[in-house]
Length: 195
Image (cartoon, rainbow, N blue to C red; front, side, top):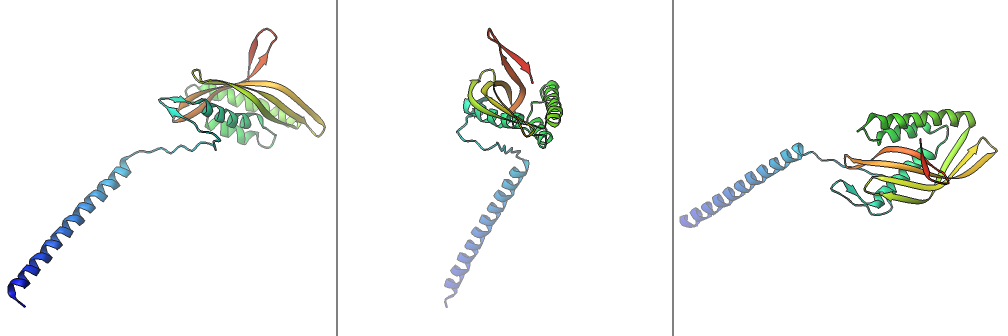
């Protein structure tokens, strides 16, 4: 073997080693930078209840389909009640109640306290079937019209056409409940009964 050939082979191996060393250092630096970015970056993952239609959220505005879906979730939690699940549903609703005013949570607590007494006393079970909704995206309000079905004990049964108004606030990336109340329809003008 020729000395010059061996020298060229050694130089080539040295260049390859230096290239791989430089690439290894570069990859190590980029991996460390990515790791630091991941640790520093704050990300929120918002899990919403299962949605059956597409929703749009942009610039603190939400689509009417999102209002509709969230109204269905809250109506099921607020009105589909039995003595066994009132406290659990109260706790769930309070988790998603707006905290911009302490009065919102206070009214929800009062609603569930009144419901707990009534449902225990009369062995009451209710569920609400939505017929249609009026959605006002600009005010963040939904009025749901439907049938409230009540069962008293083993023999009493009643179905009543009823409407409920829910108002929402967009906060923390999702809609939070502000107010929930029954809408009492008078022949001349609809009135709102706080719930």
